[in-house]
Image 1 (cartoon, rainbow, N blue to C red):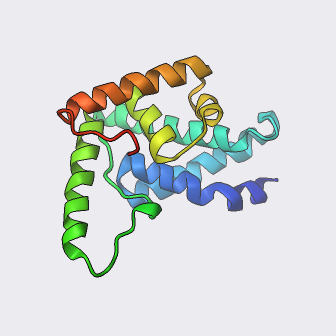
Image 2 (image 1 turned 135 degrees about the vertical axis):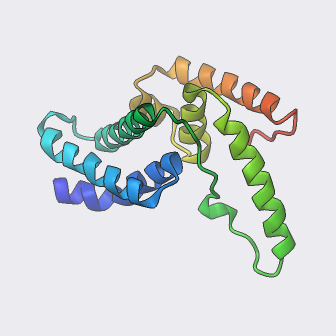
Length: 164
């Protein structure tokens, strides 16, 4: 069970931590720590909820790190589906600037807003998966996402497309 879960989810957890931490070495270390905790508590984790448990643990490790550092930041990145055509370098520059502007605006939001935007819009988790990771009910996820998108729109000065 442990090896199977590790091979299924280690890249997902690493990517999530990298988005939160913007540091490859820390993301690797925290991914390892996440799976060490998974191994330790595997008997208590409900079958089928392993990925939610792993994401929650990874998130908690990252937040603990930032609390210790007293530093909260957000990481700019592009999803795989946002790859650019190689013949359009100017398009790449425009997208990079747009991404920087978007992620800078997200970084100014409160943590709960950041969480729900990362999980729902960037990681593209379902509402139920987001509920499982954050420990919230469906209504709270929906309402927080709605408020987060409004706050993001304000941060961007009205230049906002909800599709992210």
